[in-house]
Length: 398
Image 1 (spheres, one colour):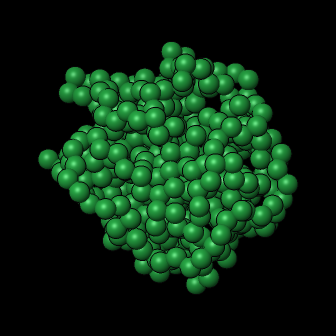
Image 2 (spheres, rainbow, N blue to C red; image 1 turned 60 degrees about the horizontal axis):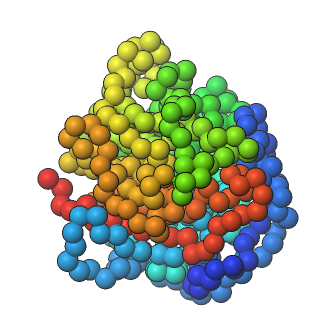
């Protein structure tokens, strides 16, 4: 297996990589993203010093006594991590956010505080080359399951099609590559978050551009899309304000629909909400699958409680719901009265993106300053490395 591994000093003002042309689709979100990524020239080199990295890193952070909400840096990177996925054996994987990051790799394994490698190999990734069906193109959502598999949703911004990849973590072998048909992931879709049911064999996806939920059967590849419901839409009252400044997307207030999506421990309930949304919803998982009418699905949706403006969420085995809080540089937990309560507040959580729990007592979060990318600023990239993967201590499961 060919490795791309790097040991990188995190230096403010380091040269930022460039991206090749992106397939432009039909929604404002994806058209804007395409325009942003076309600004850079194809094949610019990444200013990184590379070295061989170990395949696992079970002790990147020293263990000590902790209290709830303690926050630690796991890794500092010269590019923006997209979503992060802890896995068995202390392994840690991440996607590279398509709004900013090295074109040399789109999917990585983090192997140390400043070390990573392209995973499972450089040959399976687009890098700075041409898109193709047999290569990872524009991944974002990522999750490890408890059967030794890593799941990645690939938005295909260059290839023009959405695909779900499943890998064997121990070998890096591709187990599944499921292409979603146009009626499930229409042109202009931005399918970028997922929740995996390894028990019954389903993956649930969230599309923020054409707001909808998608259920994919792992064995058959059959999929169903549910859309058009108010719970999937952005709430005009959920304003994105960071550091006292209203955040714009292409000159208009940011309004993003359904984004974070999670599953209950028994895999029977799907939880979801809009990024620009103030409610956290639940629906029986089997009512998102094939053979169910939209009317039946809509009638079963219920509100679990309130949430902040958030890019990520995690539901732990003991039923706690955690959310990134974009406006407050923090992480919230849903309280007993159905209202979010501050769990972490830290200036380093500068756009806390994804939240993921695997096992143990830690919740992992990617931090990527996403609102400082040209898609939001309308001009220069105002982000400054290092970008981080962090973790917060949530205690033992009850």
